[in-house]
Length: 226
Image (cartoon, rainbow, N blue to C red; front, side, top):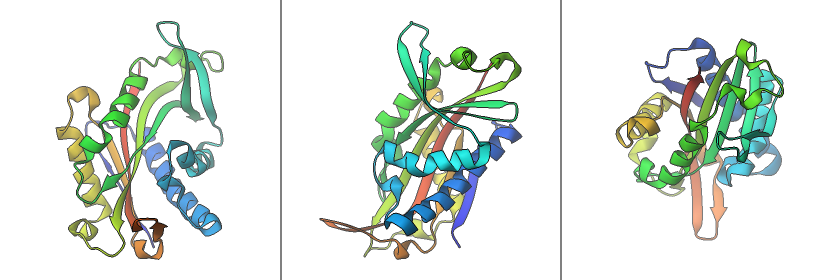
């Protein structure tokens, strides 16, 4: 049984968003193991576009709808494309997705600076009107989300103290790095973690050795668009 737990920053107190976040990560876990049984590897070990192999069905399984690469004009009039848009009940979620890795001894925020800050900057100027061609957005709660999916890797023949951490403890560790390592503009306000208890059952072979992936982190900044 794979341990799964979500850490949520107290100041962000919106139950509908919390439910959305937890459902997506739980579905992501199930889709990842289904993908592994078919293809013999995890899709989150590749690049951002490959992560969508399981993220998109994870979202669709919950919301039953999804729009990829939604075209819209920036406030400067430039043509842009939003990675993922989905709706659930009276809510619209605008998502910019990034992907990175963490090794057992990395300072997370140093490795992921570029990807994370880019995602934050990309959601900075998103308005409700992004979806005006498709929805009467004034009747919806609209949320903009920067999402960084980050697996942690270890050599398969080595042990490390982080393996003693629960999913909640590891989520707290990652959350505080993204709280202390950045100014307020770039801080995360939600972090979720999947812990794979039997990670040694999923060893990935590379030319320079074998690796395992005991944790997958979902570093997130969610803001309500007023």
